[in-house]
Image (cartoon, rainbow, N blue to C red; front, side, top):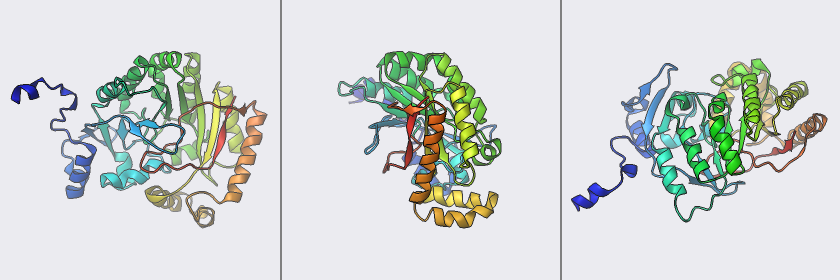
Length: 346
């Protein structure tokens, strides 16, 4: 038995590093201070190495069946991020602990390669970055996203990647190779080019125009790169003039496609965002109580929004397309469709 055990590959030797479940148990017992081997870096966030037993996550009810997320938690700290509502699964709050504690799945590329090598794998589309950003700054150190993309390219597996991170340009060579081998896309989330709104809503992200320059750089490298204007935040980024300025600049930077989606609010995301709203935009709080009586904006507002966006995409050369872009950030537990504007080719 000992010899057999010694011959086992180290791929699933979890060693002393915890799994995400182990992290949740530590936090439940001692709070985030119980993560004694987490490393606090220059950005003030704690980074906890974890190991995963699976890399690909199966989902239902979406235009794809598989997702991949190298990280949990995100230092971008976007106040409306959908993934905040999943923090309680880790026994953490959806507020500051979402952006100040990041779990790093250090063995994910190796586990992914093993899963892609299975005879049962059918090279289906994989959505990358549905929970937290695969190109948040710590990717510069760990390179988990790049190594995962290399694994996908080796198997010609199509990928739809969603990000706010210009760091994606670092991997233009791999993304172009992946595009040649499969039908893959990169979608940058750029809700607005209004800098005041960006600074308040997305405090840890790169400026919108830096992301637009990344779109152009990837297009020049031969990558199918588009933009998702999401989420649009009523009363903050929804003014028609702001929407038009954003669509115009997206078209000018060569994006292949633009899609839009109104913000929706539920669970921990709702609680966090409404606290943020009362602090930063108190004059909007009463209106939000009516507009967001439920998870989605009331139907009349959503219809008016779609009408405005249809006119803008038509004005700037858009036509309805079938591009298989990565979706808005939502992870697996119970995926739900949200009212969204279609993707338009530019």
